[in-house]
Length: 73
Image (cartoon, rainbow, N blue to C red; front, side, top):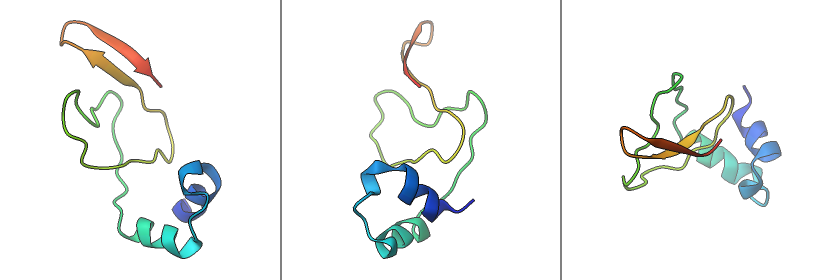
């Protein structure tokens, strides 16, 4: 996958970034894969990264271990 091209075309947050700046961001980034139902982050935890979904779907939910409410997808 052409990550730099994908970001330029599909991530509005970076639309005004130069190609060189996007390349710097991608070169300093880590591409990770997650399994279905694997947690990417946890409610209440400090955010330590910024993510861009290159393929697939991410769902956000919140609540106690017994009850979860989906916030979005």
